[in-house]
Image 1 (cartoon, rainbow, N blue to C red):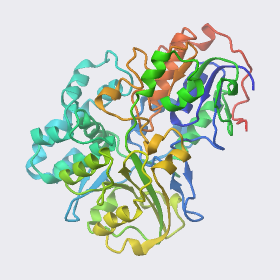
Image 2: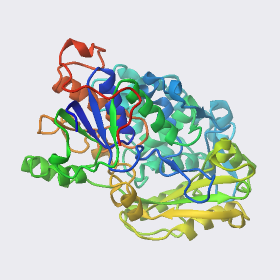
Image 3: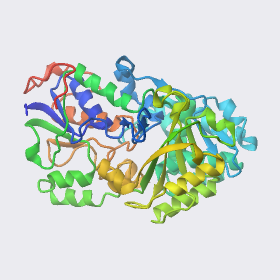
Image 4: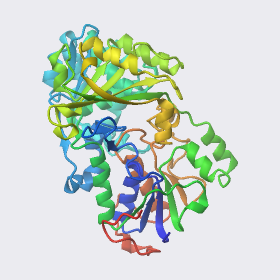
Length: 500
């Protein structure tokens, strides 16, 4: 391997984002990926039948389109196209009717009866100031650039979702809608801080939508790779890193891995106290994932469900809360909260003409081998009679199979660790710079660092900033020229050239 300024281990969206940020600064960068292709959680593959393209992990990207770092890259230059469904989200209520999260506050409030005014009062300021407070939470704890906007968000975000609903709302539809959104946290909805997930993702729906990437989530990875090659970065696939000797010579190393993998690779080098703190890092519940090839669209009882790519099937606030509470207690759920995406309704590239794809998962206990296929399909069939008859083929992964597919999904946890309030900003450990480690040349850039899970690249960006500041004595944020300090230690590959 060539020497380089920076080596990045892992070619998921955070690893690639870190690599792009540093390559743009003029540093020579190599990305090492153990799989045969880059992508991590942003791969798209024919999992069922030929011509049916399924997102292997992430599918809908409100934080992707909102990401300040992605926006700065102009990924559209490299083929990324966001597809906006008519409605951001549909939530199916116990009777089969649906409430939708619309881009328009007016259109959303029109469905909420007595809660219309309270919903508008809560979300209107968040939507107006969206970029100001979102930028403050998509990173480590620091002094916000817009403190008033951040404080307005924070004073409500610290509540539990149950408390938020009790304080502000009375309509079951409003409570159910926000419960399904907050359940993306994979935490009991009684936990402090779960309101933050409901606020962030609901406000994102109004401000930027819940879009798909045309052609599949792999389009995000492809655009990031194009940026990397544009700035003469390198990618090496089929290159597992199990010890220090598997790394090229570099001045800094970024690891897009969770604490468990970092300990396995460099545990003997880490100070005992830091290693002990990494071992105490908590992972959350897992997921059970299903993909379907369908002969026709899902026949929802309420046609409003066909206006959204994302459909939450989970019933009332208390149905969703009970399911998430049980999963976090280590119990399988007979009627799980189902997160479903129907991309081919809005992106014709996902299936052959006249056919469709759908993607769904539910939360399961950490490390569970439970087969949730029947439970998920029963939930969908209950609100879309005849759904099962449309299935041509299915593909599934339980929580442990998700981990085998991507070792970062420890026990099936797709968020890189529990998003509890104590681990939301202080991940993987409480440290002024959460991306650095006691080894001056080793940094973490995975979703096990702030701001956590989601395809937004901000963990990678902030880790790159830490590397630039601590190792190369410059700041990516200040936009300083990379030529002002350190010379590269190796000649990078020609632009656009991956290295197998």
